[in-house]
Amino acid sequence: MPQSESELAARVALADKVAVAAALNLIEDRRPQSRPRIDALLHALSGARASGLDHRVGLTGPPGVGKSTLTAALAREYRARGKTVGVLAVDPSSLRSGGALLGDRARMAFDPQDDGLFVRSLATAGDTGGLSSAANAGVEVLAVAYDRVLVETTGVGQTETDVEHVVDTVCLVIQPGSGDVLQFIKAGIMEIPDVIVVNKGDHGKLAQRAAADLRGALERLRSAGMGGEPAVWNLPVLVTSARDRDGIDALVDTFEAHLAAVSGEAQLARRTHGRVAWAISLFTRRFGEHGVATLGGREALHEKAEGALAQGLTPVGAAESLGALYLAAIKAG
Image 1 (cartoon, rainbow, N blue to C red):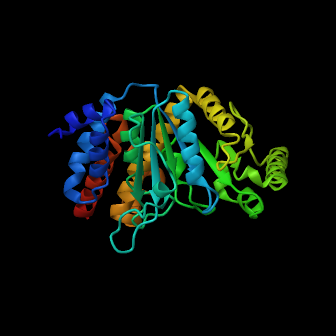
Image 2 (cartoon, helix red, strand yellow):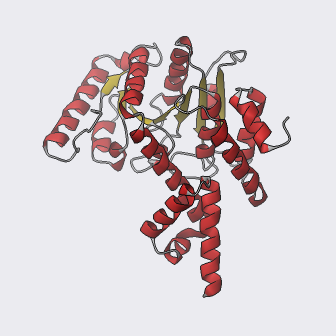
Image 3 (cartoon, rainbow, N blue to C red):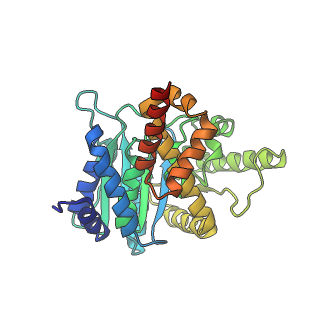
């Protein structure tokens, strides 16, 4: 294996699966002494990326809606279209080892000889929000190596919306007959999807009715002035059957259409916002609300994180910079 982070990043850019796995192993290392190496790797990856090639799609929704099966079907469709695919499946953690339970990967059957496809599970390790703390960096790794990155969250509730910070397109997956329609309409999670999918379309009329209910509810929200005015994208509701692979091609077409609609400045702004959120998350995980208050509150912390990133720091480096400011403030009394 390469000895330096720059050499590792160069191998990742060639989609070397051994190097990709090694990079993901590094970013999952939570020991403090690994932070400089992770920071160096992220710096090197930013220089290795060919701009404009990757698209990051997140699939979120409650447990049991078929996210893993849908993710696998999407990966196959992308491969059929000649796109390379990296899949990051965030799994619950083992209570004994702390590692991912690998339930998602067990439900995804792929050709291990396919060099254009890579699947990795990340353990939540107690993190909330539907993602692992390493997911941000994991997406950065896969985005250098592959054309399309699919991020499958753990089963989430109504307020766990971290996925919007790591992807370009958020797909909310629900199932018919579960009561999710009304629950999500009134919940904060409805503010983040770019695409809504009613999966298990093989349920027939039940799935079609759920989709119709969603479209009607969204239209009523917009009419009441609660849904906002779509600037470049009108939230679509699709029906798929991951089991029967029905509607998968239309869903990929919709993802590609969303990428075309938001590419450029909008996509850059979204990724920048996500990197700021990543840096703040790393800082608050170490120093908590006392750290936030010491640096002047959330708005001031956001501005400081933006400034650190504008200077060319990675989110890991920005979090370290914020930590240094906090420690200096504590020392100054």
